[in-house]
View: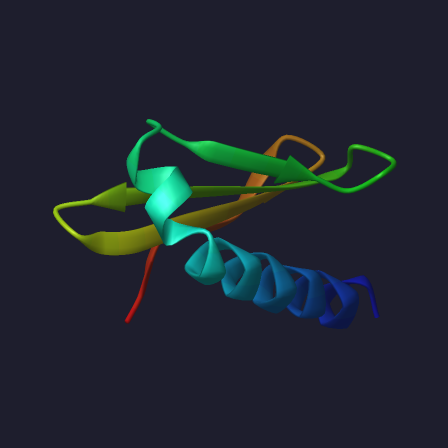
Length: 68
């Protein structure tokens, strides 16, 4: 059950990050955490491509994903 919610949050995070790609490109990384801090999405732009990762409770769930 938590995995389904996590995937939804990741999709929302990636969508938001895509919309903010111009802002992210001026930064090294953009990190977004859930209100309880258990889930964290990291988004970055490298060589014009959007990359993301997801951690839950400090453990990697997805690493090095590429969007687009």
